[in-house]
Amino acid sequence: MDSMSGIPMFVQVAETRSFTAAGRQLGVSSSAVGKAIARMEERLRVRLFHRSTRSITLTAEGTVFLERCRRILSEVDAAEAELSGLAGNPRGRLRVGTPQLGGLMMPAFDGFMERYPEIELDIEMSDRMVDVIEDGFDAVIRTGELTDSRLAARRLGSCSYVLVASPTYFKRHGVPTRPRELEGHFCLLHKWTSTGKLDRWHLRLDASEPELVLRETMTSNTIEPLAHAAILGRGIAFLPAFLVRDALQCGQLITVLDDYVNSEVVFWILWPASRYASPKLRVFIDYISEHLHI
Image 1 (cartoon, rainbow, N blue to C red):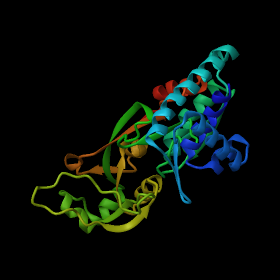
Image 2 (image 1 turned 120 degrees about the vertical axis):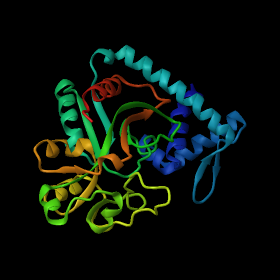
Image 3 (image 1 turned 45 degrees about the horizontal axis):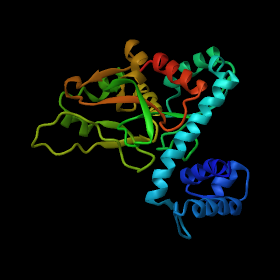
Image 4 (image 1 turned 135 degrees about the vertical axis):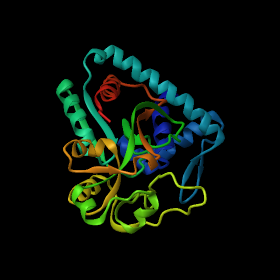
């Protein structure tokens, strides 16, 4: 039983890479955490962590042990859920990370809250690349490529990009007929928060053509302000179609260069693969998969 009691502490240290952070989450001091890990290493006769003044990292043996421990905790969670009867009545706090796309996310979240009133949603909308496990998220909704092997994933859908501006803008400045002409227009650009780099407009160019050099009329670290600026006639924007669907239908925006646009955005929901998927997480994954209208 003593060896079992140390497993949650070991996993917490491995995921936070910090005795202090692990102790804070477990409600004990960092010294207590350090002593518990030292006792575990002594009992196992193996070193689980490389320690320095700046960082804590897993040894090769610690990495193998971590995967085993995660499976053990997952089985314990599953057993507790079955005994407590939660399978038929999802409840509790659910921490979810999403991109800053309230117009897309909130209708689905609102429907979920109505369906499952005993689940408390804790939503963090941010375009930063969070670490799902170390930052303590139950699930995140993310776009782009999947690179973290620790996470399970379900594809939520995809959407093409469009180049858009208002009818008033095109009346004043003309309608571009080839991508190169965009260099003479006012451009509304997305800038990645994590790198500070501008998001490239993915357009089909001739093989001999250099990349476009676009005028930075406006930049934003989220894309919703770009859509509003485009509707107001401030320039041309490169946006996912779901964001401007209503504006296109009512004529506030018009697309251009459709044959040259070569990009789409794919949405995923991700969650820790090694943990037991609690009833509240399972119903959230299923609901969002069905009701997020991309």
